[in-house]
Image (tube, one colour):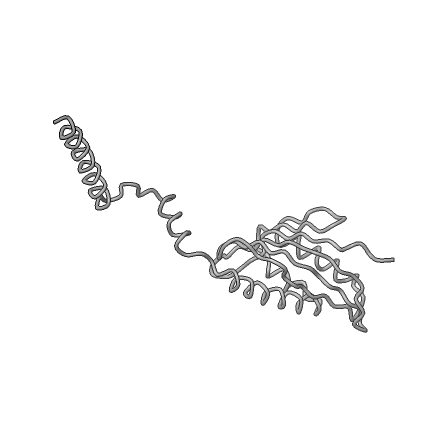
Length: 176
């Protein structure tokens, strides 16, 4: 008889747990907070970073084209109005107007025929904010490499297009 009582208690406990488990599967969720919904959306739709990298590389190619044409206005158009440029050996430029002024001064000093290219090494983030890491190569009019460097840029998608909001770069140590 003692075994029957133990079995009955166990059976009642097991059935109660099963009933609760089944009931909770069908229970509506009560957590409708924006953070929970946002987390679920982000987990469900991972960004296609290969596509994002390709989009940013197109921008970098256009940037290099404008840079090589010495078109400061075209380069400034890649920046947001609240962008910051952190170039080496000079004060930080804050805002598109300050960046444009710095670009114009820098381009006036460039050697005729010199060119620059940008190669993306890595991107990370999501479709709305992308951090880019890349390297630069500068060449003289004959095509000889005169310097190499590296950079990091943060792009934000605003009104459907990427704008650079932070930009930092510097040259590598010149080989002797």
